[in-house]
Image (cartoon, rainbow, N blue to C red; front, side, top):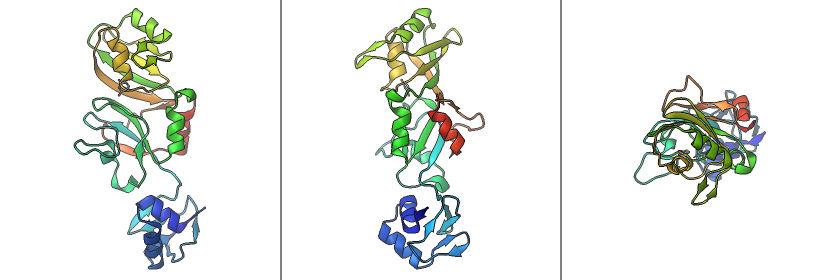
Length: 232
Ligand code: URA
């Protein structure tokens, strides 16, 4: 249960004072009834309507995006389109950010949330949440690459944790990492003189990019799906 003014302010970007005044002027409805007391405590499952729009009663939001090329993994950028531009208006709320970065030209699974602890848990190398990518390179995939990835490739910022490379075609493979350094996969293949030409994230933990989520689409995750991300 959470105070109504806190819910309105955290979900809409209004200040606490503005949220209180919206509530006292009868603009907020809980389960169909106008509630004018800011102290009213609402449950996650209550239907809260403000300004004609449904406000999420949950403390945090967890979204999955199938990232297309051409968007940067940031909350704001003066010149480029950010992944937040792809969040539908009814799911948009203050405090959302992409949990981890994909390069501008990388596609696939991206989590957007306002839960900093959750983001830390799924990104920290110590937690070993695996991230699987489909990779295409401009040279044939070799066994030497697989062996080196398994051992830990040396990059300019240190040795990588062990990574799995599964060859799926002459130029294609699946690569599974348990960390997420800057341009990591591109740099790992770069050690072999190979250039990554296509990169798509397929899964995080046990959660797979949903088949029915088209590129550019973003939807809310269920609690079960959110838990799958953290399971190994
Ligand atoms: N590795 C990369 O090089 N780029 C990404 O976007 C993700 C992993």
